[in-house]
Image (cartoon, rainbow, N blue to C red):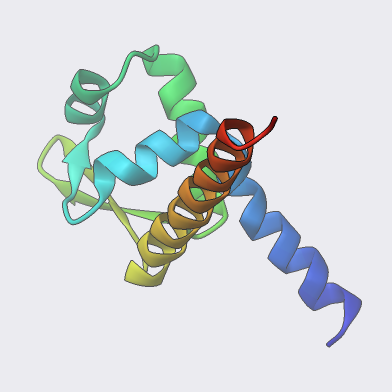
Length: 106
């Protein structure tokens, strides 16, 4: 693979490095929502949410759909949600392993 691919891959995966962006992915799982609806689901300022959504849109993670005055956000590809959930499973397994190791230390 070329270095360009790895750069693009790292750039896309950097979306997963922010707890807020992970929360946005979680909130948008299986539905599209307006900014107001997303705000109702999170403890975040509108300005901060807008910044995250803009970055996520620029990276191809979310898309928008206009309906009158409302703009709806959704995840562009269900594989993004699968990747998010898979990483959550890995994290839970790592946490369980750490907890198990702590419980079995002399």
